[in-house]
Image 1 (cartoon, rainbow, N blue to C red):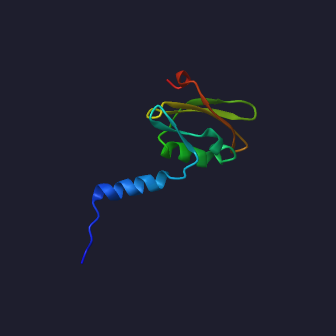
Image 2 (cartoon, rainbow, N blue to C red):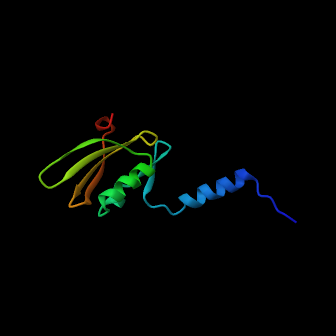
Image 3 (cartoon, rainbow, N blue to C red):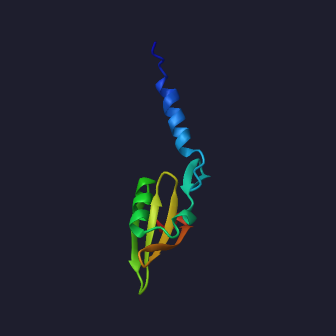
Length: 102
């Protein structure tokens, strides 16, 4: 005999299972925010994919002699990040005032 699982129950179970134990997100204004410290040491290309997958879009940036600084915005969590990469890896990442992203 087949046992059917209601779709809403299955979706809720999968959603909660994917979030349980996640240490790189925090609550703010009802939306989850990324913990910028989890990006430190990550390869720049991996960081780009991680942020894009998390709903962030690049708002631009600039280069110095030894670093690239990029600003990232997530509209759903209203989080603005400044990420500095040096020698291809994330050296600094911090949440900044959202006005820098708008």
